[in-house]
Length: 248
Image (cartoon, rainbow, N blue to C red; front, side, top):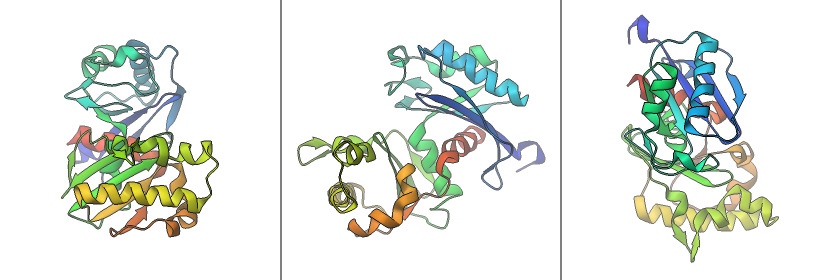
């Protein structure tokens, strides 16, 4: 990697905040303290793109950048919209970002970006083969990376388990909503991960999301045949992964 390309730029668009920072692409770390700006309401593509431009301008960043988004993203088009305005559905979002910011943008699903970062620089950096990265939060996000190559938009948080959309029963929000203890939640995660294992046969499962910080409390109550480890990049994973994918 040349000196020119030692740094990339990543932006993480969420329902409540838009965060961004330059990224050291050798180390997989933020190269400066990130900027966070509240997500505009209504969170239309044009309004969000204006905030993205503001973040880029805040660092004087002129080149291409990567941008995560909480949706299925196909070739720059956002096919769904989670916690953002419905006008994102079937929007050519990459073109909107390019027009408003004046820079080339790579748009990627937020869980996919985090997964790529964990495989390249985080908890799965020493592993090859099939790595399944899951984020347990309000919902369940997933990323599937095979020998370093991302299989985009897997959406495996929505598989049916015992007649339910999996994330409605096994996400961290379900644990909080139903006041489940770690053992009760662990039983649900066991059912979920066992179903996933039988579908994709991963070599490693990485668990992210805020609850990954409490991995030692709940993981003893989860039974899988696949080794399972907590994510290590936490809130920076999306920014790092987006920057890396844009560079590639």
